[in-house]
Length: 390
Ligand code: PLP
Image (cartoon, rainbow, N blue to C red; front, side, top):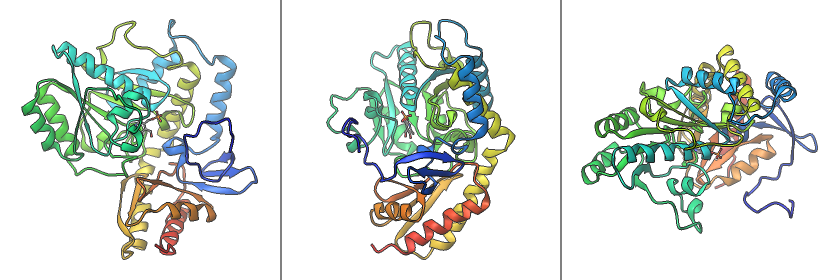
């Protein structure tokens, strides 16, 4: 542990040195099957040769250029994102939190255009949206918010997966500009809402002329078996936030919008020094190309079914397990007791898993694994849970 690092992470005792595909290696050469992928980032695995090649080539060509000129790779990436999302215009930044900040600003501009003096954004319980002051204000976690007040005003919270509560809010208030939620709660415990929830939110937003904004930072880029989580319900949000797997580890985020929402900014209203630089855009373009060529979105759906079916078969009768849920390769196993010990035991068994909300094992394996590795995840996790002395 370095005395020169701020104390922000409760780290697992692994000193990472390198990666290869689905595997991470520590400084001693011990290897771990990585089902966390840098928290849902490295969907193509580690050190993907084509990603390494494009990074090297772009580094030799042009790493960074200011957004004062035109950046062709950025224009191309915006076009590809429009294709896969069904939306129109992108703003590029460097992280999920920044993509969310862009969403908040669009919502406020939209509200102002409607004559609302203090536009409100409806957010949901158990949400997580990042670590800036505005993002923690939108997030529903005492742990995340505690000690950082005063928080940013302008967020109204309703229960997740309860569209009725939003409809009721609409009866009481005339200052709402937007609704924001994750299609599947990620940090909140891999919680999948009931079918029709997102479509109902879409309908309510249309009815009141609110923007419907989806935080796709974790669910996006194929992880759930569709490019984006909202596509499971055949709807289009007005605005989405994308990051994580978009760059497979090279920092990039995007806020993508359509119609009016995509045209709310004018020059000078928003910006980011690094946002959409050639290195990040070349990498993200290659990520999308590989995912399409190798049918990795479809593969995520197949693998997810295989892993979840396997886990359900192996753990169905285990009363330590409350529920196995998820979509594609975003999988949660909720346990009755806090399951930190499983994470620790997984390390001993050569696997990195993650625990969220203390009692949910979260699996976000890379989309490039073969069936044998998928089965290995099922075997290892099931065996660890069965051997767990609670
Ligand atoms: N939104 C969601 C749903 C997330 O899961 C995260 C990060 O985990 C963020 C936003 C914040 O992204 P970043 O850490 O890149 O700022």
